[in-house]
Image (cartoon, rainbow, N blue to C red):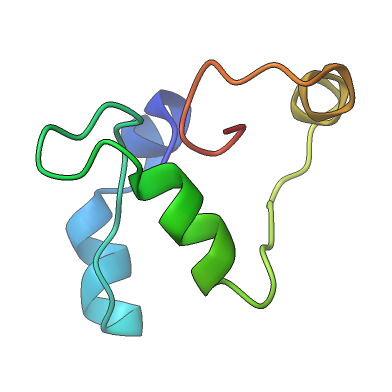
Length: 69
């Protein structure tokens, strides 16, 4: 989850609804390569809402948070 998403809804809500862990930090001390493992695990990623800012950062290869990484 991004910082903006955490202001809107708590990550425990997503965890309870979908039954999976919710990650919000790109720098995880337990597993420093978690962002790569998550990308390999997911069959599909839905970004909602896909704002112009997020789409431009994806296009430019920016990785300032876990979503973009």
